[in-house]
Length: 228
Length: 93
Image (cartoon, rainbow over all chains, first blue to last red; front, side, top):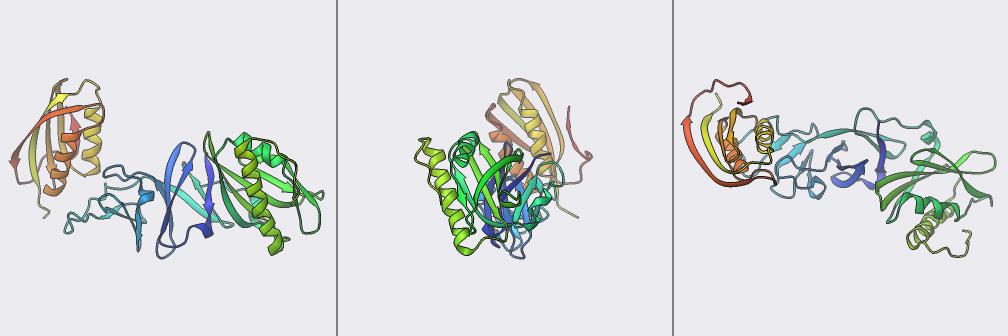
């Protein structure tokens, strides 16, 4: 079962749509005016336009190309060129299961997303994209240290699964989790979640730390270790 | 009762890739249309299609374009009737 964290909840406000990728599948994730989140194949059934380029109209997502609107039940509701026509229910988008939990949007292509329990005590911090391979990101992570508010230096422990990296302290309590969302061979998105021990300054430090990781991962030139 | 129309399409072109039939069936199913398709040979396809006139028109337009691997050179459209239709699905004959 492919379950991917496709974004942080607070990065998808109401009446917004965003593109994402799960495995090899392009998807559009959108939130209706009432807050309902949907994840669909990023392709309009009409002419194949990416739905992530569209607009949210109340409880529908409208394709940018010809304005066909699809409701939260993924069925076509309205065709602007034929306003009197009631679209047949066979005109529908390909919908996937999306679950919003622990501040993260999880999508599964084939069933209910399996969400690891460890995220219950973690809060979302931010997402960041890397234009490089997963290996480059992991390599940069290993050489870029991060210091907690109490002065402890966090280090990356083993990968919990294919896409989750935990940074913890010597007591082995997760301080920071990095969820990797592999978009392609040369593009990775990471979602960072921290426990409640971080101060505001600490969260800012996490944000700067991941930008440093990105610089190191993308340029692939080792620079001097720098502690933040 | 919902208005329906039935039209026959004669499509001429290059269908050697074999993708046209499935593509047309998929499009008919999306638009909730019934009827059949008969691929006589690699250059000649007959289609009969029935349903809401607006959706039938959209279907005709789609058939005149076809998938990327197909070249449609000409499409002739003939209205058969404007009443109910006997097919309950879209068939490949």
